[in-house]
Length: 362
Image (cartoon, rainbow, N blue to C red; front, side, top):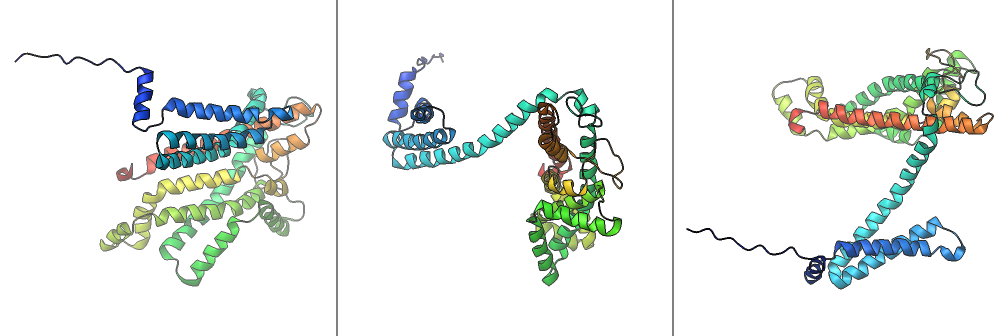
């Protein structure tokens, strides 16, 4: 047999690809990009009669022009059905962009304004004796770690055990009452939690009491219902077949929960706890009332005022000192550090979830 060589066809030119796409009823990518660019340009032109850039009008006109333009072009090329799909996709993408833009803007603003003071001094010095430039947030970072750790130690056991009771044991009026109470606690304003903790400690230690443990109790009031809800949902996702198989082997219920249910749901539980920590680590109002403001480092959570990063940021912005630019820079840097701490917590949660997840589910 003789080998025959099949002649290779030359690569199609861009014009041929576009012609083929139009013939087969598919919208070329270049046309999609052209519609998008045209919508952005039209949005920018819409603000010219006013003599400046109106960002709100620019966004609205761009979204409307993009949706209408992509629908008309797709209707001509692809037909009515695909045109509707293109229109809905354009609306969904535009909604995502509108939601994502403020978030990106906030992150960019914090990073841009916080980097000038993101230096060694900021992490090694406090505000004791500092009026204008200089100083740092070492005491606030340590205070944030202490208060958040105490809050986690208080709320996680109560929240997790409550979720286990509601899923595994809870029946009747008591379970319904606990569920209703958790729902109510989820919507409690943060300042109310702070006033509750302040009133509680005033009863035992007298007026004017400020301490880290009081701030931790206030944050625990806010964190516990989030832990309960997230852990409850994760426990309910565990298949009943696993519980039934364990019971068929004669394993006690408590051991089934400890050895089967919790290990299966541990990844989601850890993620929920991390979300709860991120929910409370940035709270300011409860800590203004309970923990107060200190210019130096306090390692004793049961005695004396203790500053956290949110409270430090608040006071550096409203009472920046002279010159005010120094205090505002410290405020933005503290906000940047707080964002990095939250990002670190989320990263650790993902790592721990991957490590602790059962082998069959990895």
